[in-house]
Each structure stands twice: as C-alpha cells, then as structure tokens.
Amino acid sequence: MKTTARAALTAILAGALLAATPTAFAADRDRSGHQGLQSALDQAISGAGLPGAMVEVKNGGSTWFGQAGTADLATGQKLRPQDRFRIGSTTKTFVATVLLQLEAEHKLSLDDSVEQWLPGLVDGNGYDGSKITIRQLLNHTSGIANFATSDSVRADFNGPAFLKHRFDSFTPRQLVQLGISVKPEFAPGTGWKYSDTNYVLAGMIVERATGHSLSQETTDRLVKPLHLKNTYEPTGDDTRIHGPHGRFYSKLGPFDAPTLPVYDVTELNPSWGYGSGDMISTVGDLDTFFQALLKGRLLPPAQMDEMFVMQDSSSNWIPSTHYGLGVASVDLSCGKVWGMGGAIDGSWSYTFGTRDGRHMVSTEVNGDWANGSQLGPISVFTAELEAEFCGDGAQG
Image (cartoon, rainbow, N blue to C red):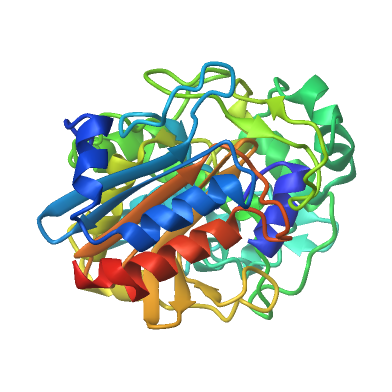
C-alpha cells in the first residue's frame, strides 16, 4: 500500500477531531470495554518494537481513543487524537469515490477506456490504453505495472538511497512513464496486481473530466462536506505536514529486521504519491470519512454496488484481504470488516469497520516495521481488529 520501491513490496505483502484530552481518554479506558485493543497497542510497542501506536473507535454514538508509545522519540511526547499523518494508499479511496460520483453524474463511465480520456499516454512496450478501462484501474485488473518496480525507482528509493532522494519531485505523467517502462503484468482484465500507477491515471482522469485539480475535487466533494478539518492533499512539492503531528520513522529495510538503524523520515516530497498515496489526515477524520462512505452517504446505491465488488486478491496481496474499487475487506475470525489501509515511509494506517459503518476503527503507527513479522505493521493492525471486532470491543 505504499508508493516507493519498498512500498511496492508493501503493496504485495500488505494503501472527527476529538475535543477531550488524552488524560480523559485514558481515564475512560478502564470502563470502556476496549482492554483487548489497548493491549494490542501496548504489544505494538513492547513486542513489535514500534515507536508509537494510536487508535480511534467509533461505535454507535460513542468514541474512544487509545495510544501507546511515543509520537517523538526525542521528546517522549504522547500521541494525540489531533495528530496528523500521511495516509498512504487510503488516498485511493478518496480518488475512487470522486470517480464514482462523476459516473453517477454521467460525466464519465467506468467502462470508458484510458485512451478516451488520456489519449496516447498509455501506449507502447506492450500497452494499449484503448483496451484498459477506468474500472480496471480502480480494481487493479489493468495489468499496468507499479511505477515503484521500475529500475530507476528501485535504485533511488530502496534502502539508504531513499535519504538522498526523499525530496525528488515527480509529475503524474512522469510516474505513468515509469510504470509503462515495465512490461505489463498481464493482459487487461485477466489478473490482479496492486499498482500505484493505476491511481495516478485515475487522478489524471478526474482532472481531465472536471477541469479542476484532483486536490480541488477531493476537497470540494469530500473534505468540505464532511468537515474533515485535518485532511488535505499536499500541493506542489510541499515536504511538511502542516498542523499538529509527531515524528515518523523508518528502518529503510525489511519489515522484520530488529537490528537495523532507525531514521526520521517525517519530511519528504510526496509528489510520487499523486492519486495513490499523498494525502494527510487524522484517525478521527478517517473514521468520519469511512463511516459516511459505508453508510451510503457519499454514493448512490448503483455506485456503492460497483465499489464493493471485491476481487480475489489475497493470494498476491495481503492474506485474508480482498480489493474492490479503492476499498478492501479483511476476513477476521468473527466475520468481515471493510475499509482501506495505507503505508508510506514512516507511517502505516488502517481504517476498517462494519459494513453499515456503525462500528469503526482507525489506527496508525509512526514506524514502518514490526519485529518478527514479514508483514510489518499489518500484523499489529490485524491484532487490533481482532481485539476490537471479535473481542471485548464487540460488546461495546
């Protein structure tokens, strides 16, 4: 669910601001029925070795926040509900929702070809944009390679080389060219493979269909109506996270390597995440967005049905996880939850809930590894979801 070369491996293996104080939340924890979830957060620090972990739960009319570890290894500052972070591939859910709204408005069809909207862009090296549809971009059945797997991105963004290139700038067109420099994964519609290039193209189609920037469309259609005051898409080459936030850390290596050094990667140029992984938000805003989406407040029924047609993706993506149009489902021991996860250097997050949107969990960790797990923080998130939806949180 990431967008650098290391993120490509992540993609294969693994994408309401609260007014109360952290002290008040901690005091409420003992009587809230979230002891299992808090234990999973604590284990993320003591067992997985992550710097910090936080979660917000919405269940009916109640809200609960929990945290463990630190937002800043230098100061020991605790994580807070208002802390902003990079949401990685959860950006894709916003983009998919905008495109489905445009379909509902008859401004495009998901069966339109890429060539129709972006003539000549996806062509050559085995690619033919006239045979790839918008739907295939959104559900990752296009066969277009992830630009993160190109030779140049692998060389510049793997391991410590990332520190030298973290502020490099890319245009969407450059990202697409990097993607199609790699041979197709398969013929359109004949397989499934997670590819950030798909959502770069999806974002470009939004701009072509509306005449506005992708940032403006996501803001006007989703951020403003839902009052997501802590959610935004960086503009230009903005390397900072604006507003309250902690620090974000990476080991720039395998997800389960406890002895590698830790680097602060808070500042980076997210232009390579255009359309696929560049947005910034909070756990509260993500809960609010997905709750509205799952409750059917953002899309008409026909588009909701399209969004939740799931692909059999678990064999070459994240185990027990399936993908629709910018959304995913996770199979837990007690049933399914729905939402999306995202990962970018230093920040991994998950937002999942019941299909009716009543019970939501949004969680984030400020490190991109988990000691002893090849799936990195996904193992932490799975433990959290099991605790909340199948454990004591399910009784709340």
